[in-house]
Length: 142
Image (cartoon, rainbow, N blue to C red; front, side, top):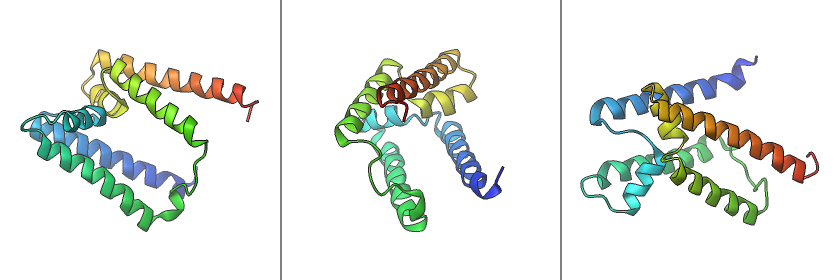
């Protein structure tokens, strides 16, 4: 295993875990991105400040990555735009159907030993793996 390839993921994972644990400990809120974004779009009273700051931090972090480590950012789409849009819609549908996303269930829910989150995360991973198998078969094994 090459340390140069592992350490960024390790540090990133530790940062996500620490931020999620901090949010839970300080506010009793779960760092589920889909729920946070939903709250912003629905303009939840008393929630807009921290939720807006959370999403702004994600955006600023992404922009910072472009400038600090541009080699880690894709410069062109890996798939055609209509396919990417459809994939995004399906992810959004799955998020609503599952009552949350991988950040809320996978990072926060599993840490709290939530049976619902464990089942949700196993389902996300299984459906994702199945999707890759089906997509590769449709592309001719690429």
